[in-house]
Amino acid sequence: MEWSSFDTWIVVTGALSAMSCALLGNYLVLRRESMMGDAISHAVLPGLAIAFLITGSRGSVPMLVGATIIGIMTAFLVQFIYRLGGLDKGASMGVIFTTLFALGLILIRQAADHVDLDPGCVLYGAIELTPLDIYNFFGAEIPRAAVTNGVMLLINLIFVTLFYKELKITSFDPALATTMGINANVMHYVLMTLVAATTIASFESVGSILVIAMLIVPGATAHLLTDRLSSMLLLSLVIAGGSAIMGHVSAITVPTWIGFRDTSTAGMMAVMVGVVFLMAFLFAPRYGVLSRFITRALLSLKITRDDVMGFLYRHQELAPVDAAPVRIADLQAALKVGFSVNIALWDLARRRRIRRIENGFGLSETGINEGKDLVRSHRLWESYLCDAMGYCLEDVHRSAHKLEHFTDSDMQAELGEATGHPSVDPHSRNIP
Image 1: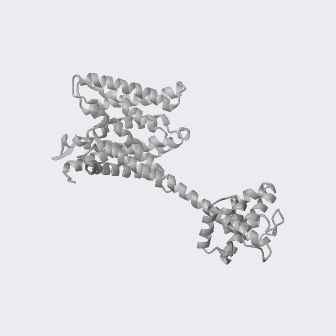
Image 2: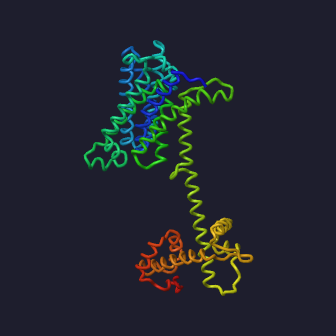
Image 3: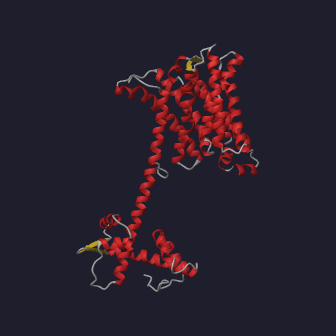
Protein backbone atom coordinates (compact mmCIF):
# COMPACT_ATOMS: atom_id res chain seq x y z
CA MET A 1 0.00 0.00 0.00
CA GLU A 2 1.44 3.34 -1.10
CA TRP A 3 0.53 6.33 1.04
CA SER A 4 0.85 9.93 -0.14
CA SER A 5 -0.20 13.39 0.98
CA PHE A 6 -3.34 12.88 -1.15
CA ASP A 7 -4.32 9.95 1.07
CA THR A 8 -3.66 12.00 4.20
CA TRP A 9 -5.91 14.84 3.04
CA ILE A 10 -8.63 12.41 1.96
CA VAL A 11 -8.62 10.88 5.45
CA VAL A 12 -8.55 14.30 7.15
CA THR A 13 -11.43 15.57 5.01
CA GLY A 14 -13.44 12.41 5.59
CA ALA A 15 -12.81 12.47 9.33
CA LEU A 16 -13.80 16.13 9.67
CA SER A 17 -16.96 15.50 7.65
CA ALA A 18 -17.88 12.38 9.63
CA MET A 19 -17.24 14.03 13.00
CA SER A 20 -19.25 17.16 12.15
CA CYS A 21 -22.18 14.94 11.15
CA ALA A 22 -21.83 12.59 14.13
CA LEU A 23 -21.82 15.38 16.72
CA LEU A 24 -25.31 16.58 15.77
CA GLY A 25 -26.45 13.06 14.92
CA ASN A 26 -26.35 12.13 18.61
CA TYR A 27 -29.27 14.46 19.25
CA LEU A 28 -31.22 13.12 16.29
CA VAL A 29 -30.83 9.62 17.76
CA LEU A 30 -31.86 10.74 21.25
CA ARG A 31 -34.86 12.67 19.93
CA ARG A 32 -35.97 9.65 17.86
CA GLU A 33 -35.64 11.80 14.74
CA SER A 34 -32.93 9.84 12.96
CA MET A 35 -34.83 9.94 9.68
CA MET A 36 -34.98 13.74 9.90
CA GLY A 37 -31.34 13.77 8.80
CA ASP A 38 -32.29 11.59 5.84
CA ALA A 39 -35.21 13.88 5.02
CA ILE A 40 -33.12 17.05 5.18
CA SER A 41 -30.18 15.63 3.24
CA HIS A 42 -32.47 14.66 0.35
CA ALA A 43 -34.80 17.63 0.56
CA VAL A 44 -32.01 20.22 0.25
CA LEU A 45 -31.41 19.26 -3.38
CA PRO A 46 -33.98 21.78 -4.70
CA GLY A 47 -32.23 24.42 -2.57
CA LEU A 48 -28.98 23.74 -4.41
CA ALA A 49 -30.65 23.91 -7.81
CA ILE A 50 -32.74 27.01 -7.02
CA ALA A 51 -29.66 28.80 -5.64
CA PHE A 52 -27.84 28.17 -8.93
CA LEU A 53 -30.80 29.10 -11.12
CA ILE A 54 -31.23 32.40 -9.23
CA THR A 55 -27.58 33.41 -8.87
CA GLY A 56 -26.03 31.57 -11.83
CA SER A 57 -23.15 30.64 -9.53
CA ARG A 58 -21.94 27.39 -7.99
CA GLY A 59 -20.22 29.27 -5.19
CA SER A 60 -20.32 27.81 -1.70
CA VAL A 61 -22.21 30.72 -0.13
CA PRO A 62 -25.31 30.77 -2.40
CA MET A 63 -25.45 26.97 -2.38
CA LEU A 64 -25.22 26.87 1.43
CA VAL A 65 -27.85 29.58 1.84
CA GLY A 66 -30.29 27.94 -0.60
CA ALA A 67 -29.89 24.47 0.88
CA THR A 68 -30.13 25.72 4.47
CA ILE A 69 -33.38 27.58 3.74
CA ILE A 70 -34.89 24.44 2.21
CA GLY A 71 -33.59 22.38 5.16
CA ILE A 72 -35.32 24.68 7.65
CA MET A 73 -38.47 24.60 5.54
CA THR A 74 -38.34 20.79 5.57
CA ALA A 75 -38.14 20.67 9.37
CA PHE A 76 -40.99 23.18 9.64
CA LEU A 77 -43.23 21.33 7.18
CA VAL A 78 -42.63 17.97 8.89
CA GLN A 79 -43.64 19.47 12.25
CA PHE A 80 -46.64 21.22 10.64
CA ILE A 81 -48.00 18.04 9.04
CA TYR A 82 -47.23 15.99 12.15
CA ARG A 83 -49.13 18.32 14.45
CA LEU A 84 -52.02 19.38 12.24
CA GLY A 85 -52.32 16.64 9.65
CA GLY A 86 -52.83 13.65 11.95
CA LEU A 87 -49.94 11.65 10.44
CA ASP A 88 -47.14 10.20 12.53
CA LYS A 89 -43.72 11.81 12.25
CA GLY A 90 -42.27 9.07 10.04
CA ALA A 91 -45.05 9.44 7.48
CA SER A 92 -44.72 13.23 7.60
CA MET A 93 -41.01 12.96 6.83
CA GLY A 94 -41.71 10.55 3.99
CA VAL A 95 -44.23 12.87 2.35
CA ILE A 96 -42.01 15.95 2.56
CA PHE A 97 -38.60 14.58 1.69
CA THR A 98 -39.70 12.40 -1.24
CA THR A 99 -41.58 15.31 -2.79
CA LEU A 100 -38.73 17.77 -2.36
CA PHE A 101 -36.14 15.19 -3.40
CA ALA A 102 -37.99 14.52 -6.66
CA LEU A 103 -38.33 18.26 -7.26
CA GLY A 104 -34.62 18.68 -6.59
CA LEU A 105 -33.64 16.01 -9.12
CA ILE A 106 -35.81 17.70 -11.76
CA LEU A 107 -34.29 21.11 -11.06
CA ILE A 108 -30.74 19.72 -11.00
CA ARG A 109 -31.42 18.08 -14.37
CA GLN A 110 -32.60 21.48 -15.66
CA ALA A 111 -29.56 23.24 -14.20
CA ALA A 112 -27.25 20.61 -15.64
CA ASP A 113 -28.18 21.78 -19.15
CA HIS A 114 -26.34 25.02 -18.39
CA VAL A 115 -23.56 23.99 -16.05
CA ASP A 116 -21.68 20.92 -14.95
CA LEU A 117 -23.79 20.19 -11.87
CA ASP A 118 -23.46 16.44 -11.58
CA PRO A 119 -26.31 14.67 -9.72
CA GLY A 120 -24.04 11.69 -9.11
CA CYS A 121 -21.53 13.85 -7.26
CA VAL A 122 -24.31 15.31 -5.12
CA LEU A 123 -25.63 11.84 -4.30
CA TYR A 124 -22.40 9.87 -3.85
CA GLY A 125 -19.69 12.45 -3.24
CA ALA A 126 -16.18 12.66 -4.69
CA ILE A 127 -13.86 12.61 -1.70
CA GLU A 128 -11.00 11.22 -3.77
CA LEU A 129 -10.90 14.49 -5.75
CA THR A 130 -11.06 16.91 -2.81
CA PRO A 131 -7.24 17.31 -2.51
CA LEU A 132 -7.23 18.83 -6.02
CA ASP A 133 -9.30 21.86 -4.99
CA ILE A 134 -6.75 23.78 -2.90
CA TYR A 135 -7.26 26.73 -0.57
CA ASN A 136 -4.18 28.79 0.24
CA PHE A 137 -4.21 29.38 3.98
CA PHE A 138 -1.27 31.58 5.04
CA GLY A 139 0.96 29.86 2.52
CA ALA A 140 -0.26 26.36 3.33
CA GLU A 141 -2.20 24.49 0.67
CA ILE A 142 -5.26 22.92 2.26
CA PRO A 143 -8.14 21.22 0.41
CA ARG A 144 -11.17 23.49 0.35
CA ALA A 145 -13.41 20.61 1.51
CA ALA A 146 -11.22 20.10 4.59
CA VAL A 147 -11.55 23.79 5.46
CA THR A 148 -15.34 23.72 4.94
CA ASN A 149 -15.83 20.60 7.05
CA GLY A 150 -13.38 21.82 9.69
CA VAL A 151 -15.26 25.11 10.05
CA MET A 152 -18.56 23.21 10.23
CA LEU A 153 -17.18 20.92 12.92
CA LEU A 154 -15.97 23.94 14.90
CA ILE A 155 -19.39 25.63 14.63
CA ASN A 156 -21.13 22.43 15.78
CA LEU A 157 -18.71 22.04 18.69
CA ILE A 158 -19.33 25.63 19.81
CA PHE A 159 -23.09 25.14 19.54
CA VAL A 160 -23.10 21.87 21.51
CA THR A 161 -20.78 23.32 24.17
CA LEU A 162 -22.72 26.55 24.67
CA PHE A 163 -26.14 24.89 24.66
CA TYR A 164 -25.24 21.54 26.20
CA LYS A 165 -27.78 21.79 29.02
CA GLU A 166 -30.56 23.08 26.77
CA LEU A 167 -29.97 20.39 24.15
CA LYS A 168 -29.87 17.70 26.83
CA ILE A 169 -33.14 18.75 28.47
CA THR A 170 -35.03 19.33 25.22
CA SER A 171 -33.84 15.98 23.86
CA PHE A 172 -34.97 13.95 26.87
CA ASP A 173 -37.98 15.94 28.13
CA PRO A 174 -39.26 18.85 25.99
CA ALA A 175 -42.16 19.45 28.42
CA LEU A 176 -39.74 19.90 31.32
CA ALA A 177 -37.64 22.25 29.18
CA THR A 178 -40.71 24.42 28.57
CA THR A 179 -41.46 24.65 32.30
CA MET A 180 -37.85 25.71 32.87
CA GLY A 181 -38.17 28.53 30.36
CA ILE A 182 -36.25 26.80 27.57
CA ASN A 183 -37.97 27.10 24.19
CA ALA A 184 -37.87 23.54 22.85
CA ASN A 185 -39.12 24.62 19.42
CA VAL A 186 -36.32 27.16 18.99
CA MET A 187 -33.70 24.56 19.95
CA HIS A 188 -35.29 22.11 17.51
CA TYR A 189 -35.14 24.49 14.56
CA VAL A 190 -31.63 25.69 15.35
CA LEU A 191 -30.51 22.06 15.49
CA MET A 192 -32.22 21.30 12.19
CA THR A 193 -30.61 24.38 10.63
CA LEU A 194 -27.18 23.14 11.62
CA VAL A 195 -28.03 19.64 10.38
CA ALA A 196 -28.91 21.15 6.99
CA ALA A 197 -25.72 23.22 6.89
CA THR A 198 -23.61 20.22 7.95
CA THR A 199 -25.24 18.12 5.26
CA ILE A 200 -24.36 20.65 2.58
CA ALA A 201 -20.80 20.93 3.86
CA SER A 202 -20.49 17.14 3.62
CA PHE A 203 -21.91 16.77 0.12
CA GLU A 204 -18.53 17.17 -1.55
CA SER A 205 -16.95 14.64 0.80
CA VAL A 206 -19.48 11.83 1.16
CA GLY A 207 -22.58 12.87 -0.82
CA SER A 208 -26.18 13.24 0.27
CA ILE A 209 -26.83 9.50 0.61
CA LEU A 210 -23.73 8.45 2.51
CA VAL A 211 -23.93 11.44 4.83
CA ILE A 212 -26.90 9.70 6.47
CA ALA A 213 -24.58 6.99 7.73
CA MET A 214 -22.34 9.59 9.35
CA LEU A 215 -25.29 11.48 10.84
CA ILE A 216 -26.88 8.46 12.49
CA VAL A 217 -24.62 5.42 12.85
CA PRO A 218 -21.83 6.85 15.07
CA GLY A 219 -24.41 8.24 17.52
CA ALA A 220 -26.42 5.01 17.47
CA THR A 221 -23.25 3.00 18.08
CA ALA A 222 -22.18 5.22 20.97
CA HIS A 223 -25.69 4.92 22.44
CA LEU A 224 -25.22 1.15 22.64
CA LEU A 225 -21.97 1.62 24.54
CA THR A 226 -22.94 4.23 27.15
CA ASP A 227 -25.91 5.91 28.82
CA ARG A 228 -24.06 9.15 29.59
CA LEU A 229 -24.56 11.96 27.08
CA SER A 230 -21.05 13.40 27.48
CA SER A 231 -19.49 9.97 26.90
CA MET A 232 -21.83 9.36 23.99
CA LEU A 233 -20.73 12.57 22.27
CA LEU A 234 -17.05 11.75 22.73
CA LEU A 235 -17.44 8.13 21.61
CA SER A 236 -19.38 9.14 18.50
CA LEU A 237 -16.56 11.49 17.48
CA VAL A 238 -13.98 8.74 17.96
CA ILE A 239 -16.10 6.24 16.03
CA ALA A 240 -16.71 8.70 13.18
CA GLY A 241 -13.05 9.69 12.89
CA GLY A 242 -11.88 6.10 13.17
CA SER A 243 -14.36 4.94 10.54
CA ALA A 244 -13.02 7.58 8.12
CA ILE A 245 -9.49 6.28 8.59
CA MET A 246 -10.48 2.62 8.33
CA GLY A 247 -12.72 3.41 5.35
CA HIS A 248 -9.95 4.90 3.24
CA VAL A 249 -7.42 2.24 4.22
CA SER A 250 -9.98 -0.45 3.34
CA ALA A 251 -10.84 1.28 0.05
CA ILE A 252 -7.25 1.07 -1.20
CA THR A 253 -6.36 -2.35 0.23
CA VAL A 254 -9.38 -4.67 0.41
CA PRO A 255 -10.23 -4.57 -3.35
CA THR A 256 -6.67 -5.68 -4.18
CA TRP A 257 -7.37 -8.95 -2.35
CA ILE A 258 -9.93 -9.87 -5.02
CA GLY A 259 -8.15 -8.46 -8.06
CA PHE A 260 -9.45 -4.87 -8.18
CA ARG A 261 -7.45 -1.68 -7.82
CA ASP A 262 -9.56 0.28 -5.32
CA THR A 263 -13.13 1.39 -4.56
CA SER A 264 -15.07 4.39 -3.25
CA THR A 265 -13.60 5.79 -0.05
CA ALA A 266 -16.90 7.42 0.93
CA GLY A 267 -18.68 4.09 0.45
CA MET A 268 -16.09 2.24 2.53
CA MET A 269 -16.40 4.87 5.28
CA ALA A 270 -20.10 4.05 5.51
CA VAL A 271 -19.34 0.32 5.42
CA MET A 272 -16.77 0.59 8.21
CA VAL A 273 -19.01 2.64 10.48
CA GLY A 274 -21.63 -0.04 9.85
CA VAL A 275 -19.11 -2.73 10.87
CA VAL A 276 -18.34 -0.83 14.08
CA PHE A 277 -22.07 -0.59 14.80
CA LEU A 278 -22.45 -4.34 14.21
CA MET A 279 -19.65 -5.05 16.69
CA ALA A 280 -21.30 -2.83 19.29
CA PHE A 281 -24.69 -4.37 18.53
CA LEU A 282 -23.28 -7.82 19.23
CA PHE A 283 -20.72 -7.21 21.98
CA ALA A 284 -21.64 -3.98 23.83
CA PRO A 285 -21.27 -4.76 27.57
CA ARG A 286 -24.85 -3.87 28.51
CA TYR A 287 -26.94 -3.72 25.33
CA GLY A 288 -25.08 -6.08 23.01
CA VAL A 289 -27.10 -9.05 21.79
CA LEU A 290 -24.45 -11.64 22.65
CA SER A 291 -23.60 -9.92 25.92
CA ARG A 292 -27.23 -10.00 27.00
CA PHE A 293 -27.52 -13.63 25.90
CA ILE A 294 -24.44 -14.59 27.90
CA THR A 295 -25.66 -12.62 30.94
CA ARG A 296 -29.05 -14.33 30.81
CA ALA A 297 -27.44 -17.74 30.31
CA LEU A 298 -25.16 -17.23 33.32
CA LEU A 299 -28.09 -16.01 35.42
CA SER A 300 -30.14 -19.03 34.37
CA LEU A 301 -27.23 -21.31 35.30
CA LYS A 302 -26.91 -19.62 38.71
CA ILE A 303 -30.62 -20.05 39.41
CA THR A 304 -30.48 -23.72 38.40
CA ARG A 305 -27.41 -24.24 40.62
CA ASP A 306 -29.25 -22.62 43.52
CA ASP A 307 -32.34 -24.75 42.90
CA VAL A 308 -30.24 -27.92 42.86
CA MET A 309 -28.52 -27.05 46.14
CA GLY A 310 -31.83 -26.03 47.73
CA PHE A 311 -33.47 -29.28 46.63
CA LEU A 312 -30.56 -31.39 47.87
CA TYR A 313 -30.62 -29.59 51.22
CA ARG A 314 -34.39 -30.12 51.62
CA HIS A 315 -33.99 -33.77 50.66
CA GLN A 316 -31.26 -34.18 53.25
CA GLU A 317 -33.40 -32.31 55.79
CA LEU A 318 -36.45 -34.55 55.32
CA ALA A 319 -35.02 -37.94 54.28
CA PRO A 320 -33.80 -40.60 56.73
CA VAL A 321 -30.07 -41.17 57.06
CA ASP A 322 -30.08 -44.26 54.86
CA ALA A 323 -32.23 -42.71 52.10
CA ALA A 324 -31.15 -43.23 48.51
CA PRO A 325 -29.10 -40.39 46.94
CA VAL A 326 -30.82 -37.97 44.57
CA ARG A 327 -30.50 -38.97 40.92
CA ILE A 328 -30.41 -36.66 37.89
CA ALA A 329 -33.88 -37.83 36.83
CA ASP A 330 -35.24 -36.91 40.27
CA LEU A 331 -33.79 -33.42 39.98
CA GLN A 332 -35.12 -32.92 36.46
CA ALA A 333 -38.60 -34.02 37.50
CA ALA A 334 -38.65 -31.92 40.68
CA LEU A 335 -37.21 -28.75 39.15
CA LYS A 336 -39.04 -29.17 35.82
CA VAL A 337 -35.92 -28.50 33.76
CA GLY A 338 -33.98 -30.64 31.34
CA PHE A 339 -30.37 -30.68 30.25
CA SER A 340 -29.53 -27.51 32.18
CA VAL A 341 -29.53 -29.66 35.35
CA ASN A 342 -26.60 -31.64 33.93
CA ILE A 343 -24.67 -28.41 33.30
CA ALA A 344 -25.51 -27.14 36.80
CA LEU A 345 -24.37 -30.43 38.37
CA TRP A 346 -21.10 -30.32 36.42
CA ASP A 347 -20.49 -26.74 37.56
CA LEU A 348 -21.38 -27.53 41.19
CA ALA A 349 -19.04 -30.53 41.13
CA ARG A 350 -16.30 -28.33 39.69
CA ARG A 351 -16.89 -25.85 42.51
CA ARG A 352 -16.95 -28.73 45.04
CA ARG A 353 -20.45 -27.93 46.24
CA ILE A 354 -21.76 -31.44 45.60
CA ARG A 355 -20.34 -34.95 45.69
CA ARG A 356 -21.31 -38.10 43.86
CA ILE A 357 -22.87 -40.84 46.00
CA GLU A 358 -23.25 -44.15 44.17
CA ASN A 359 -25.67 -43.36 41.32
CA GLY A 360 -26.75 -39.97 42.65
CA PHE A 361 -25.58 -36.76 44.31
CA GLY A 362 -25.39 -35.15 47.73
CA LEU A 363 -24.08 -31.88 49.12
CA SER A 364 -20.50 -31.38 50.26
CA GLU A 365 -19.77 -29.51 53.50
CA THR A 366 -19.51 -26.22 51.60
CA GLY A 367 -22.65 -27.08 49.63
CA ILE A 368 -24.58 -27.79 52.84
CA ASN A 369 -23.79 -24.31 54.16
CA GLU A 370 -24.80 -22.62 50.92
CA GLY A 371 -27.92 -24.78 50.60
CA LYS A 372 -28.89 -23.90 54.17
CA ASP A 373 -28.42 -20.21 53.38
CA LEU A 374 -30.68 -20.47 50.33
CA VAL A 375 -33.40 -22.30 52.22
CA ARG A 376 -33.19 -19.78 55.07
CA SER A 377 -33.62 -16.92 52.59
CA HIS A 378 -36.59 -18.67 51.00
CA ARG A 379 -38.41 -19.30 54.26
CA LEU A 380 -37.70 -15.83 55.62
CA TRP A 381 -39.21 -14.36 52.46
CA GLU A 382 -42.26 -16.59 52.91
CA SER A 383 -42.62 -15.36 56.48
CA TYR A 384 -42.20 -11.73 55.47
CA LEU A 385 -44.61 -11.91 52.53
CA CYS A 386 -47.22 -13.79 54.54
CA ASP A 387 -46.97 -12.13 57.96
CA ALA A 388 -45.99 -8.57 57.04
CA MET A 389 -47.52 -8.22 53.58
CA GLY A 390 -50.57 -10.45 53.87
CA TYR A 391 -49.60 -12.26 50.66
CA CYS A 392 -50.00 -15.75 51.98
CA LEU A 393 -49.81 -19.52 51.55
CA GLU A 394 -51.04 -20.37 48.05
CA ASP A 395 -48.91 -17.70 46.31
CA VAL A 396 -46.06 -17.11 48.71
CA HIS A 397 -43.82 -20.01 47.66
CA ARG A 398 -43.48 -18.90 44.04
CA SER A 399 -42.58 -15.32 44.98
CA ALA A 400 -40.11 -16.45 47.65
CA HIS A 401 -38.48 -18.77 45.13
CA LYS A 402 -37.79 -15.81 42.81
CA LEU A 403 -36.44 -13.61 45.58
CA GLU A 404 -34.17 -16.14 47.30
CA HIS A 405 -31.64 -16.05 44.44
CA PHE A 406 -30.93 -12.33 44.97
CA THR A 407 -30.85 -12.16 48.77
CA ASP A 408 -27.49 -11.35 50.35
CA SER A 409 -26.58 -11.56 54.05
CA ASP A 410 -27.60 -7.95 54.76
CA MET A 411 -31.03 -8.44 53.20
CA GLN A 412 -31.37 -11.71 55.09
CA ALA A 413 -30.64 -9.93 58.38
CA GLU A 414 -33.22 -7.24 57.59
CA LEU A 415 -35.82 -9.92 56.80
CA GLY A 416 -35.10 -11.62 60.10
CA GLU A 417 -35.50 -8.32 61.94
CA ALA A 418 -38.72 -7.44 60.09
CA THR A 419 -40.31 -10.84 60.84
CA GLY A 420 -39.19 -11.04 64.47
CA HIS A 421 -36.66 -13.84 63.86
CA PRO A 422 -39.21 -16.66 63.46
CA SER A 423 -38.21 -20.28 63.96
CA VAL A 424 -40.72 -21.68 61.46
CA ASP A 425 -42.18 -20.43 58.16
CA PRO A 426 -45.91 -20.15 57.33
CA HIS A 427 -45.87 -23.84 56.30
CA SER A 428 -44.57 -24.80 59.78
CA ARG A 429 -41.16 -25.79 58.42
CA ASN A 430 -38.06 -25.00 60.45
CA ILE A 431 -36.05 -21.97 59.35
CA PRO A 432 -32.32 -22.90 59.45
